[in-house]
Image 1: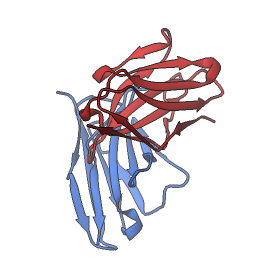
Image 2 (image 1 turned 30 degrees about the vertical axis):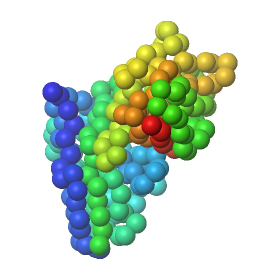
Image 3 (image 1 turned 45 degrees about the vertical axis):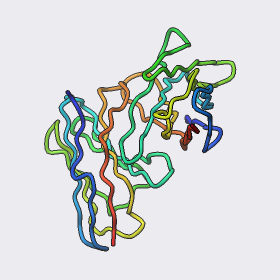
Length: 111
Length: 114
């Protein structure tokens, strides 16, 4: 089945130690998104790629970066994780204005 | 600007009872509306969507929602709750036409009591 796959499902990192989360898709969707979701809150959009064009949300900290080397893959880099960055990180895709398709997320713990 | 408001962060129903989760939206143009469900430690899954046409839309798992422009509402219902419906539900809105940002509500956690 076509899908959005996130690896790893659970990631533990140390305070200040860079970490990379990955997302791949087999849907051939042109838009890919990264959301941060903290406990019992709505997903918060960090940034998205529309094709190769990167779009950062105004309130996304500089600590968060992203790469999209090709249509299928997208990475979220957290350069210096703080305790406040512990959250579920959700990758999603869409084709233009179609509904979002989400991966199962990566739960990040910062120790 | 667009927004959605979900009334009630927690809703409890008995198994077999009606499920009603409320969502009101604000949008300067006729919106596209969505309901997503999230099970623990999983991503969001699309339940149903309204774009244009019929205002009563049916989704997966027996859920449906009705777009009421006069009330700016898009409430989610299911006639009979199952234990497996226990999850968090998010209402979302986006403008139509090309790529547009999706805005999520704060979510409603549904508890089903046996």
